[in-house]
Amino acid sequence: FANMKMPYTEALLKSIPRLETPTGTRLPVIEGRLPDPTKDEPGCPFANRCPYVQDKCRAEKPPLKSDGNDHFYRCWFPIGGNK
Image 1 (cartoon, rainbow, N blue to C red):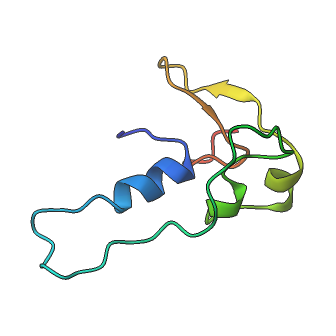
Image 2 (cartoon, rainbow, N blue to C red):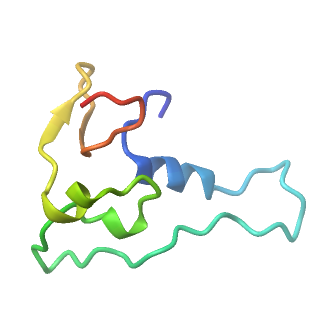
């Protein structure tokens, strides 16, 4: 996870409870609805849950990309800016 590209992965990792977190502390919530796997909707399936969403994300599915290290992702605006 050191070289993640997906903003959704970043949000998931931030929501993991940590041992050093004080009891009763609320974990970050990923807003929005889960994508429906039975529907082929336009755009990125995580667009409504992504803090970096832009119009292009809602309109077009991003192509499969590689970071060159056997790591593949689909994101128009990946973490680190590799497009």
